[in-house]
Image (cartoon, rainbow, N blue to C red; front, side, top):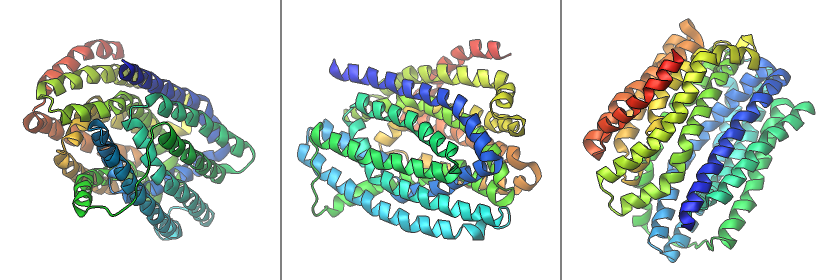
Length: 450
């Protein structure tokens, strides 16, 4: 009963956090855009895209950490749990040091890549932003191990409460530094301070409340091979995600400049909101899905949870998507200004195909738990490379809308066709029944949109 209550409370708090993270930008973003201006906002967005490549240095171990902590906890192996926590903490500290080195290389190499589209002062500011964000990212690496442990123990109330606090504090700190005149550099510094604050909070909770004691020692080669083999495929997926969501902005910054990046990123704000809302419940259910897989749940049982959670996710997705189609243009005009008008079309052509994997995110959790995500990773890399090449070709002629169309078509081919065939033929999920359920639910939002 306690687990069920924790699960329900975690889901509720996840959506409270999402509601806050959607409401706050309604007032915060226009102020930020007015103070920063289109060019500096684009520069800040560009630095975020560049620094996101540092995430590759974790080599896809984010899901691996959760899987193995959940595994040892399900097996009630306290010794194994402490040992695996020590292994992952050591690995992530090494990743953090590597991130600092690579971040410095990216910062001092910015002039080479962006010199044609950015002026000298913009390049210098970009360097400082990248360096600050590098420090923030490096700190987040070891912290993420303890954050994953809290979720694996299904302590959703504590974890979501900290996330809510962070969601509120981040824009407040940003407004303080913006009104103090520190601009985008102040915002980057404020983000670093938040990461520093998370570290002792998560560590103390894991040691005192969860009883986790890090055990360091010689790691069996067989175990390293196992986690690296599992992570390698997730790492490939991470490369694909970066090619989809970050490389577009890097190419836009290099070819069209910081202003175009700013407009494109406003469209991405709506895409991110939709992603976060749809994935909130599936993230809560990942430990439960992993446990079901370990306990040899049947394909029919896995299909049931896919349909049940997918229906809830689709309620949210269809509500947001239909509202955005109808009210998106006037909303963007009053919210951010007419100079961001193209952001409506950028978001629209990416949100529609993105809706498919968002309402099927439980299926992704299933193949992760079954260690059958190799096909998805390879497929994602292929369509991501196609997206990058096509974006590079169309940018000079069709600008940011052309880039968004390339991303949307690539995502539709991968998630709408290839991955659904894989779920049905290889994993054994009843995808036809899933889409029949979704189809019945589509009638009302479809009519309302028309």
